[in-house]
Image (spheres, rainbow, N blue to C red):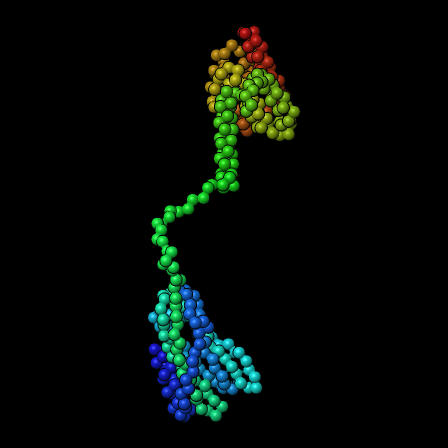
Length: 311
């Protein structure tokens, strides 16, 4: 189709600008031959005066069966002296099959200053495409070898080894912590010595006393802290489920223990007052607040002394 358009353009130029002569010229290849897959330049030298127009036909792609265009037609100006322009048209070709390829002829038109159009026919050269020659005298067909295996280096396995050691160390630490935790021992295997329940309770009550919660209008926090301390002590000292149950049920179980009745009544009154403060917005008086910590301390000391006497 493109060559048909070129021929039509040639005929149109002849009819418009008048009769012209067909001039034959050789196109050039940058090398005599190429190997399969190599690239080669197809060169078209042109010469005309400055200001004259020119046209060069561009071949189809593929140029011929087996020859492909890598880079389309482009022009390089070689020189421009004394008003004479020397230009080269270049096309980059390649082929992936060996053989001799006859490249087509291409047309070029030059419109001269006087209006005459000169027609140039570039002869197509022969492109030789060769394969790499094989020396059949010494050539021996060998079996296909399997994939080459390289020895594993220390650098390749070092990072994975360190990662495996780190994971193993983490697992060991977790397992050891869980086992020693169940055995009531530290991470290094030493037994964990827990303070007796009365020591823990008295220390907690002393801390609450120093915080001065009810003096700062924090009665609810004050009674919550005191009763929680007593609940923990009762659970550890008497084995009563004190943390999860209402005060009434807990006190019923505590009443079954061998607790001094007077001390029991004081503690029962303390829990009743605490429930009113926490759930009924009761405002305890100063004397009641001041007596809360001493009551709790007396209960702890009395039950502890009773434990010693029983032992």
